Structures are given as structure tokens and as C-alpha cells.
Amino acid sequence: APSGLTWTPVDPIVDGPHTVEVAVRDLAGNPAQASAAFSNDTVVPTVAITSPNSGRNIGATAPNVEITYADLGSGIDLATVRVLLDGTATSGCTVSANAASCPAAGLATGAHRLAAEVRDRAGNPTSAGVGFEFIRDLAAPTIAIESPSDGAIGNAAAVLVVGTVADDSGVEIGVRVNDQPAAVTAKMASGTR
Image (cartoon, rainbow, N blue to C red; front, side, top):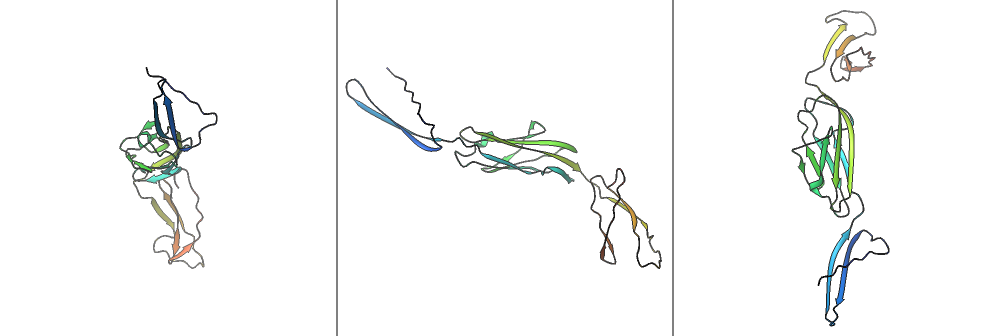
């Protein structure tokens, strides 16, 4: 009749490959033996979100979600790769041995939370998260030079350039006079940048 066998080591088993061998002899003296190879992996894998960046992400289209992961022990269980955008699992991800890419089409303007989860083949879990803001910007900024007026004639050694710039996502302001950069003092009004 079959019999069960349980063995618990005195010291914890270290990570890495191991072999267990069992030898038995029945009451008639007939020997038998068996062996099995196994690995122990207690180290969690790593995962990183490489896109989008934390903070502001500005563009005409939403940024793709990109993650990377690695495991030096048993390897990543690719079936456990999950990417959650605002708490909802994303679909349409392309998963490879060390990275995944997921489209974020239809992402609304505003604040979002991204999480990535993976497990290694031993079941050790890990996760990463990032908060970011997406600003969909489809229009060029508006700019108006108020002074000097086009075609103006002056007699000063310096010229004061006054104007306004407005855009939904913010702007970088640069002024050039006769193809030379000029210092800019920008004053922002509410609703313009």
C-alpha cells in the first residue's frame, strides 16, 4: 500500500538548484530509489515603469505605457504581468521576456495613477506605481507682440518688447532681436502660460 513521506529541513533551504534523493527498502529487502531536481527562489523580481514619466506629460496623443522587469532567480512568469491604469487592467499589451508595452489610447486629460505588477515563476510578487498628469494639446500657442509695433521707428539704445502668449499646456518663451538671444522677463496671468 502506498505510504506518504514528509521531510522538513532543520535549516532553511538556500536559493538555487537542489536535488532530493529518496532510497527505500521493503521488508523483503528489495531496494528502490528515486530523485527529483528542484530550485528554491525567495528573491522578488524587479519592475520599473519607464513611460509615462511622473509629473506632466503633454502631447497630442496619450503616451504609451512602458514597463521593464527582471528576475535573477526562477524568471518572470509572463502570464502574471499586469498593468493597471486608474485601477483598471489595460488590454492590448505586448509582453516580452523583459518588457511590456500597452497603448493608452483614449486617455483623458487629467491626473492618473499607473501600477505594474509581476510575479516570478516561484510566485514572488513585486509592483511599482507612478502618478502622472496627461495634458492633450492639439493647438499651437497664441502670441501677440504689442510693442514695438510692426514697422515702428525708434531712437533708443534698447527696445522693450511687450507681448502676450497663451497655451493650454504651457510654453517656453524665447526672444531674439536681430538673430541674437535677448533676456526675457515673463509675467504670467491666470489662464495663460
